[in-house]
Length: 251
Image 1 (cartoon, rainbow, N blue to C red):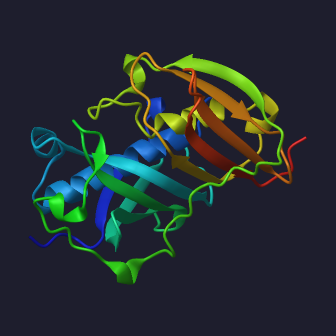
Image 2: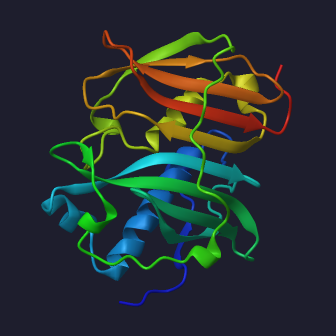
């Protein structure tokens, strides 16, 4: 089945999607990116519910989001997305967010994996009972690189949280968009006053309800803050790693 190229999702930013400065929260953008991808696939013939019935779901591996400017509360925006092909078991998907005049606001490159929800194992792309049209000619660039936390940087524990009902999704784990909130919650009010220009997040292991997440961060170095989460269980395995870049040097 042919679909619009690229898939376009038009919407207005609501109050629940804006922060205390009336700016579009990064987590809300990630939520809309996930919704747009779901609708793109649904337009080709398979819905999220149908995938769940077949025991399959999507797991985000890495997001590389560039924010040219933060959209504002009640601003009309358009989010375009397309699948640009596979690299091994990874599904590559790009996004462009534009304002009402067509000016770019943000761009993102992402990599996903198709997973068996019961066995919690990655599946080959051929396991999906649908041919997903790819558009490599629209690529925004190379696949996003996994965030590599610098081992020489000193970190400190910022806070801990317990994964609860409000953070989980239909795949049974903490939704990928919530990690953007986890990162922003690790920032001071002074740091939040600086303009976020890039957010890179790599997801290493899922978090399920009643699991504890230990959030650690570095000091700002040349406008960059590194944040990671560890399991609060004995094994202390790394759950995610993130790199946040700001326009201004943060004191």
